[in-house]
Amino acid sequence: MKKDNNKPSSAPRNGASAGAMEKIVSLCKRRGFIFPSSEIYGGLAAIYDYGPYGAELANNIKKAWWKNMVQLREDIVGLDSAIFMHPKIWQASGHVEGFADPLIECKKCHARLRLDHLLEDIGVLADEKMSEAEISKLYKKNKKKIKCSNCGQADFTDVKKFNLLVQSNLGNFTDDWSKDPVYLRGETCQGIYVNYKNVLDSTRVKIPFGIAQIGKAFRNEITARQFIFRTREFEQLEMQYFIVPKDEMKEYEKLKEYRWQFYLDLGINKNNLKWHKHENLVFYAKEAYDIEYNFPFGFKELEGVHARGNYDLSQHAKFSGKNLKYNDQTSGQSYIPHIIESSAGVGRIMLALLSEGYTEEKAGEENRVILKINKELAPIKIAIFPLLKNKPQLVKKARQVYGSLKLYYMCEFDDNGNIGKRYRRQDEIGTPYCLTIDFDSLEKDDVTVRDRDTMKQTRVKIKELKKYFENRL
Ligand code: GAP
Image 1 (spheres, rainbow, N blue to C red):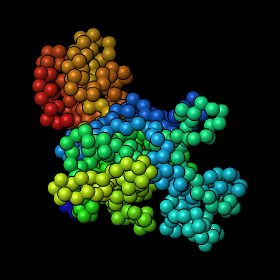
Image 2 (tube, rainbow, N blue to C red):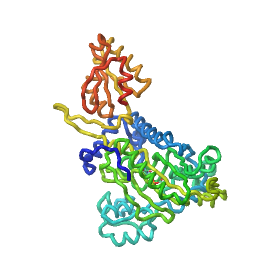
Image 3 (cartoon, rainbow, N blue to C red):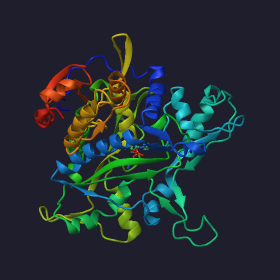
């Protein structure tokens, strides 16, 4: 792997700190990043809404990914396929048969739990890809050690594989809801596979090429845990790269390196990232690695980078009866391309960035909380304050500055409370720069620019602000 440009770090964030997660969840609610869905009705398990700053942050993550994957790459094009697709797609992909997690139910408190997670918790290697028989065997062997994570008892039902596909009655006008179900997509990449021919025939792409898309996916996850890490509705960032079969592993290594660098460029400390190799590969996969991040609850999957052979297109060719071969004009050969994929979740990247950036510092007598997030990703780039709310000449000038900068950057005008409180509020949402218009500003036509991380204050002429931020943002 190429040397990365992440500067030698200070000590990595203490991912094991028990209180960190609660502090992040509390900040997200308090400052309008993430709210429990349908909260006034008591919430809906494993579903979350993004508030004003969460929506900005999610958009910035998606923009950064799209730029990296599509804008900067001549060989990758974008797509936006529908959430609903022909139900046969989910048969071809294996989801109807095999997209299932091992479930056991506690006989005491009736909590439904993922057996592979309970086994992992006691140090036994297990995963959701194991068959019911395989995981039942492991369960029997370790039964005495497994306790319900809800009530602590150890009396469970037998293991059963629970299918994660979410069904809908779209287009079904009968009284029978379960008849001919259509599914809310369980992953976005199926929309890419079934459009591979359309993209090939309508654009100038040639193998090797990729198709990238961002979109919602839905899974009936058994356990709702760890905030936005595992939700039942989430957004994926997926890129499928179509290649000559013999080049699969060479291209795979290139993609791994490219994806690793993406996270370093987002400002994630390399010590908080690691590769995890899948030991239990599905039969068609050549190789599978996950990029894991050191969340407050430990290293967990952020993104999967997998070499999938020609399984996906072969299955869709078989189930649709269509020819999905690629006619290679360079070699004169005709073949089903192999695919390597990169698949990440917006929510998990957001949680990684929040975990990475959450910082508590002593500022004089006070403790300050700062979200030290990459400036490019910060929800608000510049906050503009008139020193005093009740001085019309200060407010007018501050509004003029706000009016001119908002054309270029996401800005916020704030005249609420004293300046100290306004700084604290902006620090907590990660705003890199705060501008204050004071009485000197009226005479000298300048402002104070205060830096989030250093708290250093600099006077800058109003007419030079645009240039000043061009160099910094
Ligand atoms: N097409 C391959 C695929 O979907 P996956 O490992 O199931 O693979 C890829 O999902 C990524 O999607 C994960 O690395 C994670 O970032 C995100 N993801 C998966 N399930 C999720 C869930 N329930 N909640 C939030 N993000 C999820």
